[in-house]
Length: 480
Ligand code: UGA
Image (cartoon, rainbow, N blue to C red; front, side):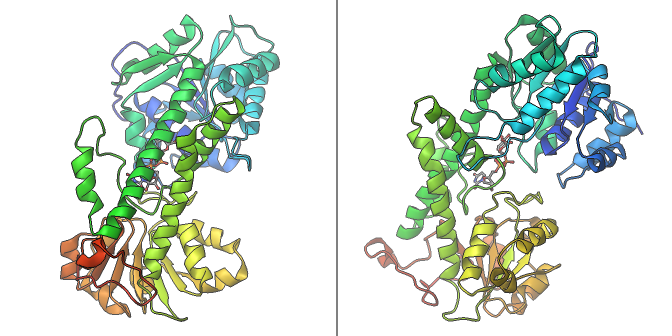
């Protein structure tokens, strides 16, 4: 059944989306839901086929449903060629990957190649086209890379083709909601016509539109992600200190985050941030500034602080395991956060590497990320593969474990039936996300060890920092 559109205004310009990855597909489907006629294209034929059949190639909350309804409504279509897309769309978004290079810079080849191929397709099109870069690119890219590449390949001047920037702020697991109802829209334009087109496209969205230059929009995206990463790393640092001196980090965050100038969001202590964006973007931000002779000393430290937090998470797990060989850990949640099957930069990977590398048997489980985890594991050294096993159910992963590590707090883990506790050799949950309910831990008879929570440590902790070696843990009460 075609869905009712959220759009009520005049007909918006037609849209093309080049690159149907997580972000491209969520954006395309959201435009369609707002009443825009959208043509998508991806270089991968199987991805085109999946989307055309009304499904999402990714595990992302609500995305499959949205794609299905928008394909059925006819507002979202998939083209087999860029020429077809270029012909049907006035505003064309490039949603292509910008993978990191070993130098920290981003690899602009996919963006450059996409712009060139699109430019060639535009050569055969009549009428004005606006090419908009949605991918995260360093300030200046739209104007110094994309604009000349599109102009050269299309042979067209500014009267026929313009380039703009419109970064996305979609977080995985919330992409559909973020795409349908953004809290702000940032567009970077260099001419009134482009601004007018983007204003009419976004007229149906109930969000403030911030109009800046293309480089300003590109800078905004890096500043946003770097600041969010900084907030998390700051909370993680305070949480390590809190843990050591017997303070609960959540109490502290409530106290200082309730200052509206600071805000409580993105101050949740954990094993360090993961995901395809933060680490890559902060490195690229630092690198791009350095290339311009500017040192971003705070951002330089953000990644180092994150790595330290991940090492600390491994240390916390180690502290709960028996001495010697033969220790077993159930590792629950493998993706970089719950609600996604995305393993990119997941903190689970370095932690599993570290503890399995020390001889611990890791029994891994995730409700949706196991296929990707098995794929990752298959490329690891044989020694590591021998120590890591994957299990289809949580109960199996817990069998004989000396501790359960909660890395991504899926609801099924938090519901923890008592029978799971009985399967373990030692009933301990190391909660790296501070998500496991204390009452459930009591009810299920399991001891809870929470990152960033030293409240159960000996009072002497304040004068003598606790030194914990494997098997010699500070006493903790059940469900502390
Ligand atoms: C992030 C940003 O939140 C989006 O606004 C942005 O559009 C996106 O990157 C992008 O550049 O494409 P994402 O990486 O999907 O989104 O996920 P987040 O929810 O931001 O989480 C990133 C990592 O930080 C996760 O590992 C998460 O568990 C961790 N995190 C987040 C914390 O440890 N503490 C927090 O308080 C929040």
